Length: 241
Image (cartoon, rainbow, N blue to C red; front, side):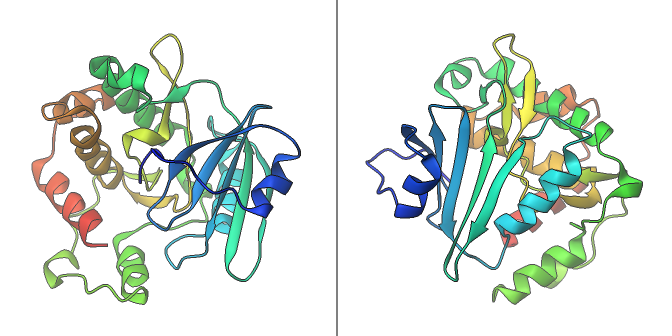
């Protein structure tokens, strides 16, 4: 995933969904999909269908999480045989990897860690109908033709079961002008799992976005001591699937 550095072609579908609003491309995913920000307070995600997640699945997760957490309000979802789209209302704040926050990594890392803990504490485990356990992640990867190493098929015992974000990389936390987290985005795989599945990925992603040396600062901001065994396992699982 990356911030588009070159001009992005705008599809007819996105033009229609924009309804005359100006468009700024802000994110490109690994499948070639692009997220656009409109000048009237919306985000439009449009891209090819893939076997890992779907916008229909994300829409269902957003609708479920909306009463409990600071997540985008769903406005529209749809698509055709090859492509899909999702339109949401913008939340306050900037991505934790906006240039402003990349220049202030200590503030950004603290916000991401505190925000992830708040998300885990807010989403009700007993009511969650979505699954992100290891077995389902491996099954999803297998369905996409990925051979997951046998060593990853037996996870560590669950430390604390939570509703995981499931893509807790730093870009998916928003930070307000006060330097505190203000919301979360991109919930295509949200579901029940050990909290370390999220913590491992969030802390690992600090190196991609801010450089080395920030992993434990994020974990401290989350409010736990580093569990090296679970961190290692869930990072390997993320990279493998």
